[in-house]
Image (tube, rainbow over all chains, first blue to last red; front, side):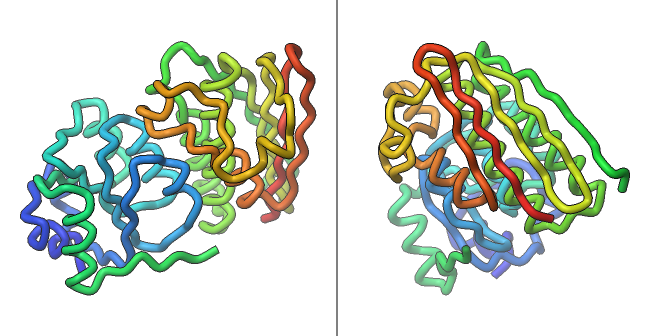
Length: 116
Length: 140
């Protein structure tokens, strides 16, 4: 699916990265602890997280993650948006909680496959 | 590529939001040099975890990165409290990080295991109350 599909499925709002909405995403990962995200490399991945600070963006940057979805309506601040724009990462925010956000995407075919 | 390129970073622990800036800089430099995306990602993740560790446990430190045509060496040196039991620290899930660090998204006890996982070689030298030096190598 594409980033735009993720946005539609989760009824999410786009915070930044409109120009990348057509990017393909192949896998997803849901975590609030960034080292758990860093433990498994995935390609063209989406990160769903309740962690709303700069390290969520940094983690996505290191992992080449395409898009971050902030759950429970969390809104990234200006410094996070600036860094995400600089690194070409899409930021979305959804009112879903973690379990339902992950479950809804899974139901639509997105998987958590990991390599390494 | 030149035979050898050296980069030095001073990591401050004063501001947690800045942790990762050194790793980010290395990542973009390696990308520019045309290093393979896989090696770039391995270096970025291993160094980022190390950088975060320095900020959490050791009040910062110095990172030296040496890039040669065959490998990237990352040396993280701090004057922190040292690691009491390396074997225990290497276990996935073991952490001595304070709770406030967990609310920032770290302290899951995966830092050192992840560093080992993404580096082709890793060596830790540590002495209590003196400091820790972690050397990691990633083959290109």
